[in-house]
Length: 372
DNA sequence: TCTGGGGTCCTAGGACCC
DNA sequence: TCTGGGGTCCTAGGACCC
Image 1 (cartoon, rainbow, N blue to C red):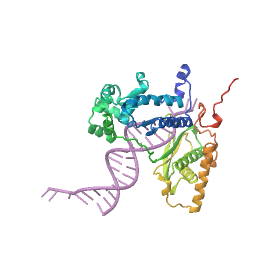
Image 2: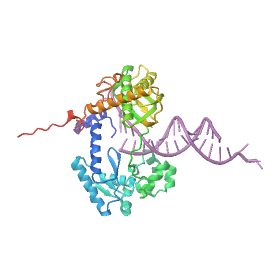
Image 3: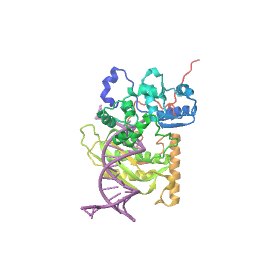
Image 4: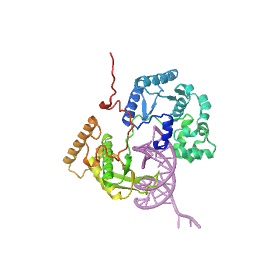
């Protein structure tokens, strides 16, 4: 895990490993289908991430819960075709532990139920702390010094001590491991606080022309994301740096600036990003990555009065809305501003091993041949 | 030659207010 | 001898998540 492909070529060859580029369109679509399948059986579902959901099962009779969990797996497998595991418990943190056990230990056949305190007493000692939600490597190192190694040790820790050691989130997790829920289901998607578009280049960038194209295209994406989430901002941060893994001469820099008024207009975002980038760019370096970040997002509705006249602003908003819907229908980047460069620019991330986007692109739809 | 891309929350300390 | 008692906002850095 985490190894760059070029470092393990020999292993890949020897073990006949198939290599795939990431395929976010496919993942997003399958995620939605899984989520739809879950909703078809359980009314209250929090979609937590692209591959995890929390389901409220309190309305079901206690005896129905496990059969329901198996039926959910069966339906997702039948409808979407991918395997899933279910963890059942009184809190989110314990449900994640249960899911971990369901996934790692074949004897549970994909469903692990931790509702019973005695069962928890048996199983929590077998789960390492690093596997518990909210405890990463830094916490694990602190806990190891105190001899705390398993989820059971963690549950036995005084919440006040956990809090002193790992802030309020650590304290909360200890309660959750004891079966006391501190994390309610979140059924409305929280409004986003920041947007970032950052990429490593497919090939090192050495010219301002290429850097400018990259920044313009990331700024375009950032503005699109803002419009999709119906938010706007008055500030922008741009950064660029060289490769940090090799011995290339090192350069890393970033800068931020404000718009005269909140905006999510691609033209304005691109212009400011490019202007900032021009200040940061130094000749003579091999750049590996750059990015555009926006914080302090506000709902579109509360935008400050703009520099543009209201009429002009309205027209521009309509124009970008039209561009968005064209791109939604005809594919991203079909209509774009000129400065973002050609669609096949060499700085773009390579995706040589990408599987077809079977379910989201007409051109990549699987073909079936029937012989009579 | 080649090393991912997004996010959130929390805390401490400084500056400032009345 | 004794030196107030609250607040807010901002920033940087750390830790964690998928």
